[in-house]
Amino acid sequence: MIRVGINGYGTIGRRVAEAVMKQNDMKLVGVVKNTPDYKARLAVAKNIPLYCVDDSGVSKFRKAGFDVSGVLDDLLKEVDVIVDCTPGDVGKTYRERYFGAGVRAVFQGGEEADVAETSFVAQCNYERAVGRRSVRVVSCNTTGLCRVLNAFDTAFGLERARVVIARRAVDPEETSKGLIDAVVLDPVEIPSHHAEDVNTVLPHIDIVTMALKVPTTHMHLHSLILSLRQKPTREDMLKALSETTRVKLFWRSEGFKGTANLYEYGRELGRPRGDIYEACVIGDSVTVKDNEVFLYLGVHQEAIVVPENIDAIRALMGEASAEQSIKATNQSLGIV
Ligand SMILES: NC(=O)c1ccc[n+]([C@@H]2O[C@H](COP(=O)([O-])OP(=O)(O)OC[C@H]3O[C@@H](n4cnc5c(N)ncnc54)[C@H](OP(=O)(O)O)[C@@H]3O)[C@@H](O)[C@H]2O)c1
Image (tube, helix red, strand yellow):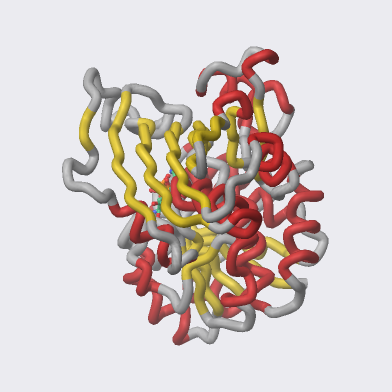
């Protein structure tokens, strides 16, 4: 069993914790929580041992009536891998503490790429992470893009990718930031950071990305224009996508006209919290003109990186091939 700890039990940490508990080859030893709030109560309700960052956190939690198993350093003594799910740029402040304890670390996409030895999307570059000390699962947008771009590149050769990303303004629970009444250029500069991030996984891809923030909380929507080296038919492209793991096609004839339908579909699937782990391609949007292909891609920002975190743990431990790990993760999470 791979013994796993999680530092940060927020949007991503809660989902990764639950996914770890579903793996036959992993044991969730505990999670580190900073604030003694209802999310900490949820961890207790799921029988997940709670740890605090330091001793002052322990007193705070005990005063609030929580049973605490120790501090982060205690957790690090008990695990093989720590999954850092703290907010962006906070993970790097823990890096040396993880390594000092001899623990391998998975970081998230809110960190700079140099926080870890390699950036990671399982179906694109699993082998690069095998046996390493650290890996960074890239952001939700980058994960969705890499899955689709890699599929086209492998099947037809990708010459160029141009992408406009409409980003959800905030996550559903982020009430302090509010919902915007605007379309915000985020960032104004072109390319947005997503292009560089894709290149941390697929370095050879010629890609330019632009990003806008729009008033929604549930999903991102990407508009892709891709130039291919070959001139496949539309059917060839749909076949390539349908044969790619963790990419799912949705159809207008079945009522999928945008993110609201995808979000509703996710809620009806019966997965925890309505999570959609797949990159969602609207099949009808796949349009071919000469060697160019156009399509829309939906990304459930809170969920798409969850399977990647599970595969990243196995890759670090070097105990499974990409194919074995992706299969096990997919089965455990209900990804067909
Ligand atoms: N949210 C998304 O849609 C999304 C998608 C893909 C990737 N990511 C990336 O995943 C990472 C985590 O994001 P998130 O959205 O899950 O964040 P989040 O919901 O804000 O959760 C962060 C967690 O870290 C804890 N924390 C805060 N400061 C800490 C510190 N100094 N030391 C230890 N723990 C601390 C928080 O503790 P308390 O709650 O106890 O205060 C909370 O449990 C980021 O790198 C982000 O860029 C996020």
